[in-house]
Amino acid sequence: MTRFVPTIGLEVHCQLRTASKLFSPCPFVRGAPANAVTDAYTWGLPGTLPVLNVEAVALALRLAVALGCEVAGESGWDRKHYFYPDLPKGYQITQRERPLARGGALAVPDPAAGPWATREVALERIHLEEDAGKVVGGGIDYNRAGAPLVEVVTAPVIRDAAEAARVLRALRFLLVRLGVSDATMEEGSLRCDVNVSLAEPGAPRSGVRCEIKNLNSFKFTLQAVAAEVERQEGLLSAGGRVAPVTLRFDPDRGAVQVMRVKEEALDYRWLPEPDLPPLVIEAAAVAAARAGLPDMPEQTRARYRALALEPAEAALL
Ligand code: ADP
Ligand code: MG
Image 1 (cartoon, rainbow, N blue to C red):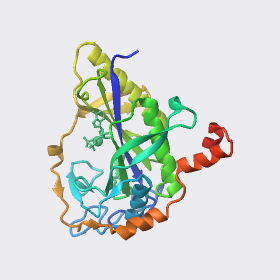
Image 2 (tube, helix red, strand yellow):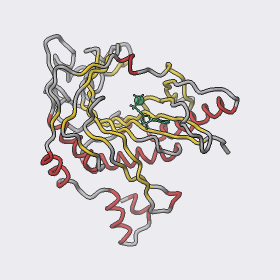
Image 3 (cartoon, protein in one colour):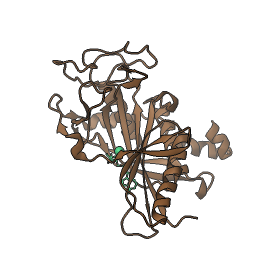
Image 4 (cartoon, rainbow, N blue to C red):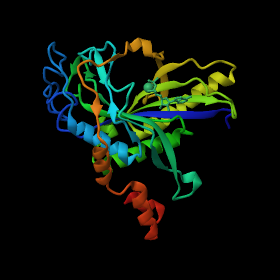
């Protein structure tokens, strides 16, 4: 039994089901031969400029209204710089200062509170950004570079590893129901970073947060959070401190490994993106997106419950 209370927050990246990339008409085809679906923009060639894919905006908007987020009438774009071979432009275009949407919540099954119970997991924000390429073997595959992502950031309200996995499953279910993303972890269209901190019960401040990057299965997410809680517990119980670090999960050893000291905002030399106008979403578009929503999973569950199905049967259906 632990003396410390974990706090967990997720950053989930979902690839949007669009025909083309976020800022160019280059097709986005999963499973294509390496470097078969690229263009001058994907390669970051000088003289190319981003043009926003409206289809990606529509899908992200659909997700935002489904989650009850407040959609920004005007959101904006920022450049996040880092040097890595899978990022030919040398920066990623994302929405840091003015995200597409804020707030909202995801209904997540809460088995400890009852077989039909759900808990509202609060969200911080939802924003659009472009994906990076992939380093494979000795080379780089740029097919994925520029693919459209929506990032869903939860508030730090998740209580343990099992709940973190349930949040991911609930989000996956919703993404598929909405047709927003294939959300297949095995194929990388749903990936998750987890933030974990530990504090004494009743402590006035939260503990130091560490981040495990790029988890690509529900099982690994569960194992990684559990391993990180254990690692931090070990440090704190021995009278030590938790340093803010970024970690990776090694599925073969079932252990987390420190990659680097946690990066700070300065490291990325954030700049407003000069080549894109602000993204304006009118109230009518938000209303139309809302009107086009199917039943939410919790409504479907309620209907099955009214039909006297068992929770497990409802989950299966
Ligand atoms: P960064 O860029 O440093 O990862 P973000 O704002 O993108 O920062 O992500 C913040 C994430 O960290 C959110 O998922 C949030 O819930 C989580 N988080 C914030 N504070 C804590 C904390 N004390 N313990 C655990 N997770 C936290
Ligand atoms: Mg992060």
